[in-house]
Every structure is written in C-alpha cells, then in structure tokens.
Length: 240
Image (tube, rainbow, N blue to C red; front, side, top):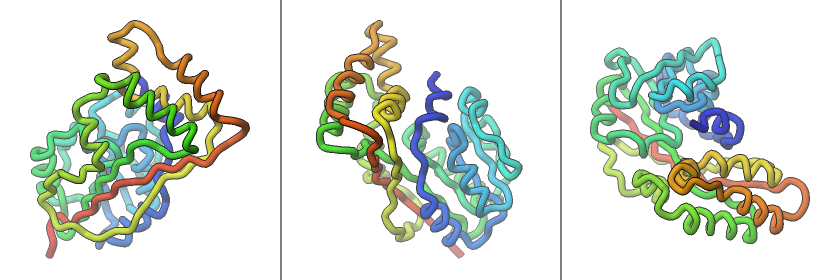
C-alpha cells in the first residue's frame, strides 16, 4: 500500500557495504536480491555483478522499482524463487528477512547457491538525529504504535541476533546509513512505517498530524544528519 512512499523516503544503504560483498564474492556473474522492494540494493549490486535478479512477492513494489539494464525483476517469494540450481554467486536480503519462512528460505539458498557463494542479510531499526527528535520518535514507536507492529518486528529490533543461521559466518566491518534530512523528510519516512498503516486501519484516525507538530517543535531549523546503524550478517553458503 505504501510502495510509492518506500521508493521516495527510504534511506540508501552505504556503497562500502556493496563493495565489501563484491570483494568477498569469488565470482561476479549473477546476484540475487531477495525481497528487493523498490530495487535499491539490486541497482547498487549491478555495479559489481554482470546480472542481478531481483525478486519480491509484491507486484506494487516491483512496479515502483527503478529499471536497469543489468537488473531483471521477477515476482516471486523468498522460499520459491524459481531460480536455477547452483547458479547464484551472491544472495542479498536488505531489510526483508524477518518476513520470510527462515527454514524454507535457507533450503532455497542451499539450492540456488553456487560453489563458494555468499549470503548477506542486513537490517536496521531506529535512526539517530538529536536527543530531542529521537525522544519524540521513540514515544511514537513504543507508545502510539505499541501493539500495532507485526510480530516479525522483534527480529528487526534485535538485529537478527538470535537467528540460528546454518551457514559459515564471515567477519565483516561495521556499516551505517546516513542522510541529510529536513523535518518534512523525516515525517515522510515515518509515514512508511507498516504499524502506522495498521493503526490507521484499525483506529480510523491518523496520528501523523499530531506527531508532525511535535517534531516541528523540537526540530529547529534546516537540515540535520541522520544515522542508522546496520546489523549485517554475511555467510559462505557452500564453501569449497
């Protein structure tokens, strides 16, 4: 429902992350970006791989995805990709893994991964701007929207730390997303939160005008730097 807002307001993953994944990959023929959403990660991977297959179960998301000559978009689930056996050199999942059936996805990864293939999964939770702004957002997140987040949100909050990944973990550095935002950018981004859509549907009213007023009051003037620490998990799927 909010696919257009996702494409406009969601932050951009750091270029250094893609460069690190390309460095770890022993072949750069074919990458699979699973749960691609608006195609952000797929487009970036095209700078390192000959071809990228980007899948998502949502036709609405794929319709908003940016076209690229090296990216092939397909409507498919994470658990049944219809990709060729042992064909994929890098598998990425950006802010989508918590929606998957973990075990079935791992089975699919084993099936499509080429020899020495890499699996990279990452997520992010709340951003950091200023203590005053962060306090208002946290109150909205834990207060107003409490009880409206999907159960899968717990995996994001812990950065997938307790997931039992059945692959060989590889050490990677720390990464974060950054942006320069106005207060209107922040309000637009918060409008993409899934729990907000659920709140509106169930309660029949919109809490955003009140939230926007609170944010404008504490924001001050101009643009502000925004940071999202990333929780990044990288694995070797079929080691030699």
